Length: 383
Ligand SMILES: Cc1cc2nc3c(=O)[nH]c(=O)nc-3n(C[C@H](O)[C@H](O)[C@H](O)COP(=O)(O)OP(=O)(O)OC[C@H]3O[C@@H](n4cnc5c(N)ncnc54)[C@H](O)[C@@H]3O)c2cc1C
Image 1 (cartoon, rainbow, N blue to C red):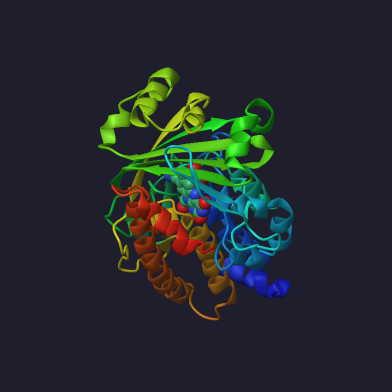
Image 2 (image 1 turned 90 degrees about the horizontal axis):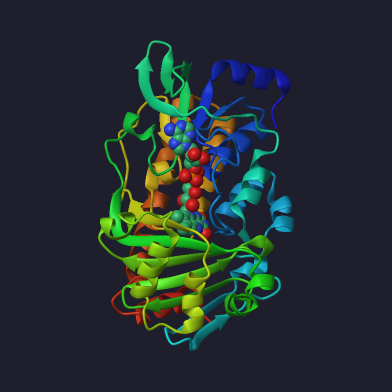
């Protein structure tokens, strides 16, 4: 840790802003905060609970958990997380159990945590500026990097970190790329109080997840805390096939999905029949590898830098990147820009590897040959 006079000097020297309060932005801010660096956090959502937080996240030992360690939050994570949530059951479309994997009691490789719990853990003492959506970032002005906000205000910083997710408004300051559709769509639904209201489905799902893979489609149900379950119908389809359906027309979406999964075992289809609301989640990715010519005063973290298929890496990488960038700024003896450049090289190399792994994984999980999904599971989780 640094002495107060040293911190004040650094604080005066570097005006740092992070855009977005997802896992990347919050870990970045939290680790800087731990090292005594001031950082401004701007978030578009008007309040922390303005949107449903999304499904449970598994945090890996060498990635997300390492980031929490760097933030001094690993012990608290261990009390909140659900190691039993690592359990995974795979069924055939007729309901036959093909795999039933249970973690050992001491297995802490990938425990699950609800996104809301993770967010609150990371928020801690941070003073996020809610309702401050960014519209544009302009590097290279006389006073530094100029940030334009939705409310018409403008502010200038020495470093602006874009942690604003898939549709980043910071990204255009460093790169021209935009996300493209993978050809795979998820439609999400959920069940509440599953143990009380749907005990048969609670048994089917177990403590963790149940997955069923068919030809070019799959159904995955994942337990969150408090008896909440998220169900993902996954399938290959042109982008407009489902997004054309109004997600608020619950019965239209439900019957379209039931037609798509026609012939699957009744208990599996019950996951869709009893779902309460639906949301379209077409999967987009950024080109691989995504690198850019370094721009002084601006960088990206997480999905803004390397949006990839959701196979358990995105939030983990986002968090570790946040921690590593913060540490290299806090510990680096020299120029802020040198610290950012060194971080970018490291991020690009690691994210490039994961982007390939997750793209190949998606091809196998939503595949013409469902045996591919089972083979992938056996490679990742040997008996
Ligand atoms: C169904 C699904 C399941 C997943 N499961 C896992 C998993 O188990 N493990 C895992 O590691 N990853 C998982 N992921 C991926 C993970 O959700 C993302 O990779 C992760 O959330 C990226 O974090 P981030 O902080 O970069 O971006 P985000 O989480 O997208 O956060 C970006 C933040 O920026 C804000 N923002 C956006 N635009 C602006 C703006 N213009 N101005 C200000 N603020 C803005 C947003 O409101 C948001 O708060 C999953 C993804 C999906 C879709």
